[in-house]
Length: 107
Image 1 (tube, rainbow, N blue to C red):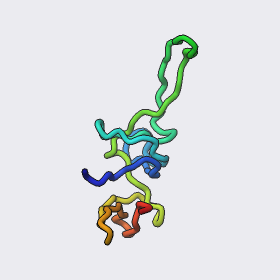
Image 2: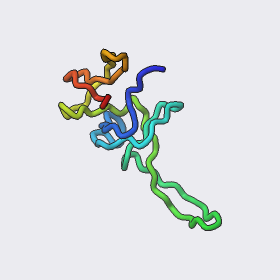
Image 3: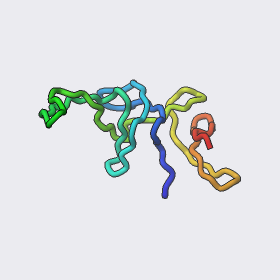
Image 4: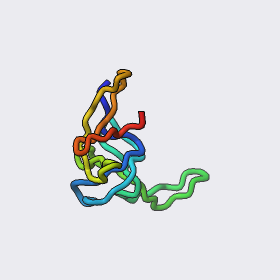
């Protein structure tokens, strides 16, 4: 299995589209469609019909953003960074910041 570039709870910045320049935390990664759900970004309105005990109405929820339109924020340098990979001495793979070389995973 390939090393994942984005994971849940990563902080990302949107680099293209309507939400460009905004940052948020990744809530979910949708591998099948190469999209991420980012907290409070790309919000859409969903009209729900009442079903049994659940009341209907207009609900706001986050829609997916394609992974090519977001970039990981490095915790050390605080800037958008490309993600690289490195093997540790024990054989585990970790993600690294290409800008400053800092390890991004808490392994």
